[in-house]
Amino acid sequence: MSHYQYTKKRRKNEHLRYTDRQKLEIIVRMNETSPKYRRKSLRQIARILDISPATISREMKRGRVGPLYGKDLKQYHSYSAEVAQADYDYQATGKGRKLKIGKDHAFAQHVSDQIRIHKQSLDAIIMRLRRDGNPFQTDICSRTLYNYIPLGIIPGVEQRDLLRGGRPPKREYLRLRHAHKGDGKGIEERPEAANTREEKGHWEMDCIQSGKGKGSACVLTLAERKDREVVIIKLRSETNEAVVAALDRLERKMGAKAFRERFKSITTDNGGEFLNWRRIEASCLTGKARTRQYFCHPYSAWERGSVENVNGLIRRFVPKGTDISKVSKKRIQEIEDWINHLPRRILKGKSAKIASGRPEAA
Image 1 (cartoon, rainbow, N blue to C red):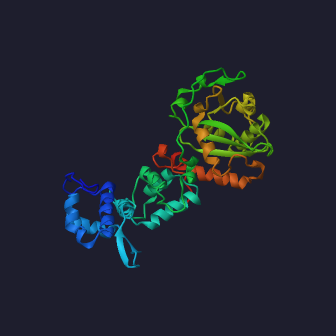
Image 2: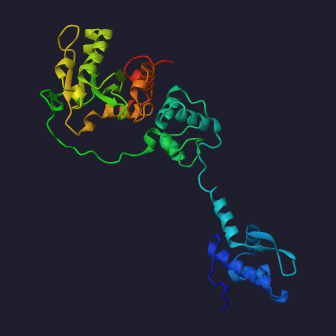
């Protein structure tokens, strides 16, 4: 049996494989070097490979290469299995279901602008369109939009441009249990209404530091557990005195009664800036209790996960290593407004402003 002969019976409508194309290339090369009377016709080639003559004809056009030059400098065209396979693979990219986005370039550009310019998450973009009305032809879910990013369908947007780079959680947190520092109240004493997030007015508090060697300025963040409302305050230093002074200013601005109703409890970590719980709890206006402070367990960041999530959002605008003393109070307020107007999946597409009953700015 000749090395190019092929005896396998093919199934009906079966596509050619790369090995089939290689065998066809061998026969074509042999034809080119053989005398004219020994060359195989198209039908003979089809019979050898057990393929329809029409299929061979189309395949010869698909893998056509040339013009090439023979010994007498006569031009001719040949067949390349590599060229044919490359064309087949390219044509195969058009198979399957069409993308839901279709040719809606306006939608793709809108998503791109929201991510690159306005720092929005994909989830927030979809929820805002569904809440406020979608003027585009495309109506897709967040998961579908996430799948489009690595495909390069959204112009100018890569995986690294997404919130936290589109990375999944690195690990599960270890649920260690250690006693908190000082003589303050532990999280075990926190009211059940705060634990279950059924009641408004229970907050979590934390600080974001400047980069090493960039000064002592920091940002004080407070996140409401039920409605996810956020308060962000710039501090000159990460000290207990600065934290107490910030809460005092907030109480004077709101009034003692309004502050007491809005901040029923505050949960913090065991950082030195939060250890003087007596001054944090005492009103600067009446001297009575204005709130209750509860300490998490050490190394248990998940116990105040809401404020940790807020810190991640703030880091989109104030990256690690930033000198916070150079970030203006106006910019801090803009970041607070951006977070409070961000549609949240956990709030069923509402923003914290809407969920808390405070009207959202236009």
